Image 1 (cartoon, rainbow, N blue to C red):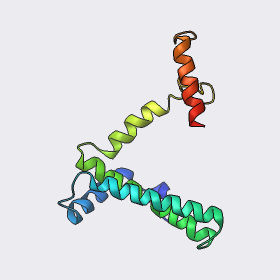
Image 2: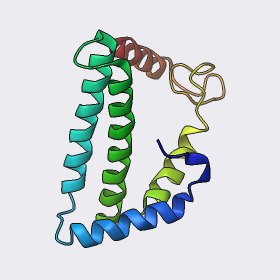
Image 3: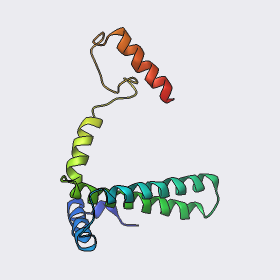
Image 4: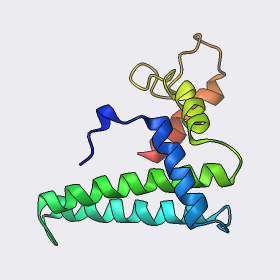
Length: 134
């Protein structure tokens, strides 16, 4: 396994993008998305089999999960590039929103809000949606 502490992520992403340009010069913009979904399926498979304790050792499944997560990220880097934005851009934008959420203190929306800023019907709808997801 690679020691991630010493990895220059910007250089790594740049190298991945160069490798993708060389190996898949005619890739359609949706193809990396399909690859990422396939790898998510492999991740789910490894997780399930590890939990069930079948079709390999715990370590086999652990290594397969690490590999699948890495492959998903590589596919998403490719997807981002082919669709006109960077992986850094997507991650930074998403993290900027997600880090503001606090699901422990605000289980309905994750966001802190002033009391009574939502109507009772809106709160009831949110609570119903939350209950349906459980």
